[in-house]
Image 1 (cartoon, protein in one colour):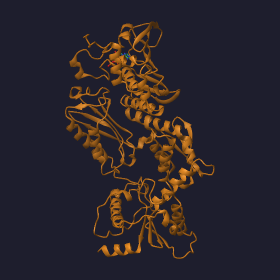
Image 2 (image 1 turned 30 degrees about the vertical axis):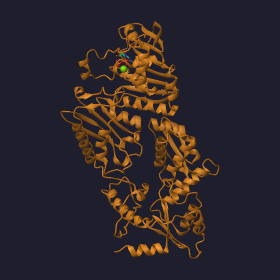
Image 3 (image 1 turned 90 degrees about the vertical axis):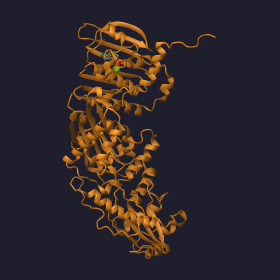
Image 4 (image 1 turned 180 degrees about the vertical axis):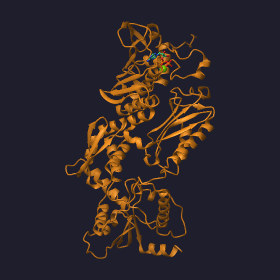
Length: 608
Ligand code: ADP
Ligand code: MG
């Protein structure tokens, strides 16, 4: 029997390593940018074509390589950053494994131009699939320019595995941000398909964050700081009032290296717990600096996980530092109740006592910028009381309006019509007398349902009502949001949201659907962008549905909106013309009919 075991060729083993290190264009971007940072560059340009599929080029003004090094850098385990195992513990550089360039080269076509300050001429090397095709001298600036073309050209399976350009580009931008944020003193640029996405001048941390996420972050961030023998911790957290539903801006850096840590993320969530709605996520940009000997960054091939020797102490420092900042900057909880339909979501156990009616459910003068200590808590109590009442009602297995019983619910909008009394309860519910008893409608949910179906059925139609805004509102967006907005202007337009791109991340909101006009244009557009972020992988139809859902929640009629009788009748009629009148678009039950027997039962079972 012939021997079966043989050593893998260098080419094959590089391709296998590439599978681990380079999963997608963004991984190559990360490695190349890290090399440029390690080379001491003060200026780094990243040029990408087709979301990195056809070209990723990084140009730096770092130390460059001489001819011999330029050849060697593509060999497996070639590194200038590590020579003995003990060095690993003291490492300050991003790279050290010496496998990134070998891996990338094995699955792409490469052109490298590089020159050190000691040399008059530079070196030009071309490779394909890890094989050197040519080597020559060339004239070039001090530093390195490396072009990676047609990544995965010889690994079709990988190529097929890539997602849409949008999604791959987003990941590239993510990697870019994760390096540009902790290296604020380095100038960075990012150009995609000839469009400038980022042009970041050297700055300090705050300046860099504002440039990346938009100047409106100036008022959203507060500093965090804590110095102990073990760790120096600093950075910024977003104020509770600006938390988002997407898990967007959450960054931990350990010795300037981006890491993920669900464990430390918990510490931050804990600090914010009482201050923000459950489904929201705080923003943070937190830096830990500690002795490299006390961490192990080597446990993950793409190096985004870290093992701390003393994880619990770091958790405790972080928690206390964040709490301290929240306290110090007096970030008492602020919550715009009118925009937060938590009412029907609050789970409340059955109770035997009648909840007393709350005095004021919604403060219509509410100003989210005024400090109102404890207001969130107070409102929560009211909500719980209402939740109790709702629970009582729902305990009776009330039949839902089916198409069969709808006709009796259709109202005459004429106010004179007798026998169909309607009544508004605390600006929250509409009560109406129907043949069998009492109809109860959640007014905001009902309006959401009506708008949702309207948006979906009429979007894009000629007469779909855009109302021009008298004084257009300016909106400045960070790079990611800028891209999303640019890519969806037509979609917004079809819903009546009219936005003008003025370039450089500046937009002007010129029109809004008339049904949403009074609801804060800026906030509406921001929440639309937010909902698109959550729908990245969906097709156009999926995005439309998500947008309709986000937009219908911004309608004019909210909790607390006082309606006159004909408005209430109009609302009820429109609701029952909907395809799905019983539920809000986000699936809350919004309609209940209590027949007279049920009302009698309620009255007799609820004891005072
Ligand atoms: P590592 O970064 O882990 O050392 P890489 O494969 O990424 O391994 O790079 C191999 C070597 O090539 C580096 O150690 C460095 O000496 C050299 N190198 C790579 N990129 C650059 C660059 N942009 N400027 C100068 N030297 C570079
Ligand atoms: Mg490297």
